[in-house]
Length: 293
Ligand SMILES: NC(=O)c1ccc[n+]([C@@H]2O[C@H](COP(=O)([O-])OP(=O)(O)OC[C@H]3O[C@@H](n4cnc5c(N)ncnc54)[C@H](O)[C@@H]3O)[C@@H](O)[C@H]2O)c1
Image 1 (cartoon, rainbow, N blue to C red):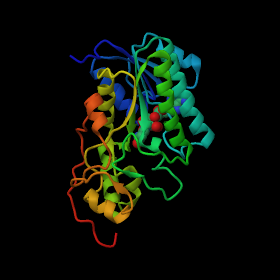
Image 2: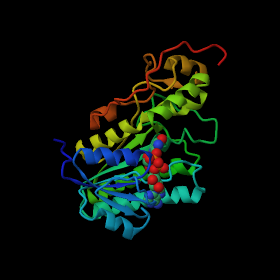
Image 3: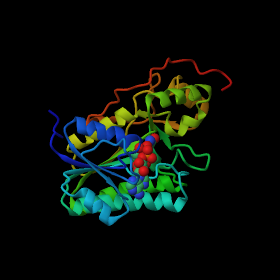
């Protein structure tokens, strides 16, 4: 039986792409789930469904009643989804509100949806390159947009909440997360032109694996505030990683070599801290990078 059986978990952003699959998964593990969403979603199945705003102190207080743990996924999930002020303020106020209230209530565990964008590279408006690959926890940040800034700030909020209230927080730095069908379509685009995937290291995760990582982060009982990258082991492009780096980022330092289509992201903390390894990979052949791409 899962250690989550009988525990009461608040999931914010429960009607979203990752939230709906996560809510289903946590309930299947035996948790009693409160779902907080800003929109009424009749298809959402949870033990308690609340419509509310994660920026509202009252809505979050009501949602946290009786909770043992919180999974905070609510956010405006892209730079261009709303005006800059709305994206930044919604994300940072929501994360502060959820973690501060959970911490003050004595709730011990939180899992927060972070992003690969916390490093600032994928949604940057300049021709940026990472200082080195594989991406790891020490990669210098280069932020030029408000969504990335909000995700970077959320990690500081998580550290503050742990330091102040002692709430353990795992921030999962998700890469692009989508259904297998959507990811397969994206892999065809990357086969045509891999360049747009460079700053994300051609990384991805299925929604099922993202939801699994949330469950593992809840059960791992990691202490402190941790933020780390997650991704499938191999890239979403059908070419060798070394060949793509030679072609599109020859000047970027490689602190080690990559085998086949190995993703250029350090996945060690995800394995060591929560025991995560992706189970749902998009099957792709390993092809020679066409000349002239
Ligand atoms: N999907 C990805 O590729 C990806 C990648 C990296 C990080 N993330 C992060 O994962 C989390 C979930 O992403 P997703 O892909 O499921 O996005 P999504 O847009 O499908 O879901 C986000 C949910 O948050 C809700 N929400 C937004 N503002 C709210 C508010 N003020 N109050 C209450 N609810 C609010 C939305 O209504 C939506 O249901 C987000 O924090 C996102 O930044 C997603």
